[in-house]
Image (cartoon, rainbow, N blue to C red; front, side, top):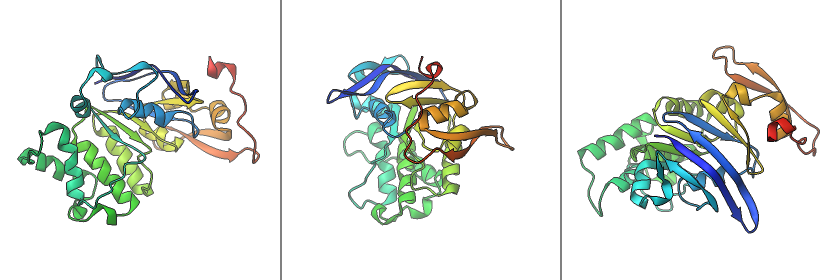
Length: 269
């Protein structure tokens, strides 16, 4: 199922956080949103999982305007892992994961055999089956993060949006999670800060700066030394990964305290 952001604008307290963002994530693609802090990435994602209503513009899932769908139907199609995905009560891991089935069940309907199998599979896929009976508040940050990813998968969404899903994960689990997302067959929109991981995990990248889309395309098309210095204020040498050929960045910081150089006209047009 395609995900389309069409002219998305978000204005809060007179300030435009996202400006006329148009972006398409084709069915089965993994698209990464990258950009400096405050560039509008998380705000755009909040519009997709309906935590925020855009000031103007439309989010479409397939041919449908997301705003026209019921909350239940929207949750059946779109699952989200947010930055602030807190669990306040000390449910067990298996109980938290089972909450992902809520959009598909009615009232206090108990989990059936299929639901239980889905939950068990998600626990295995994320490597947390051994934690099933543990209370989630007693887990490490990385373990909790994998529990919340499992909960999103159990929702059986067509579209998955993730805001910095590699937070709290060690290197091994970062790579395993992003590799899993690439092979999951879902339409994925993900915010990542690590540009090298983004280049390896994503089919396409969309770069935001000050709420605007600066450039989109394949990682090789997007991650140029000119763009990285213009958007992030960091000098970088772009090299090909020796095993995969993906672009990888070797960084050298600019002088401390310097602001990023103004973007070249070719990047903002």
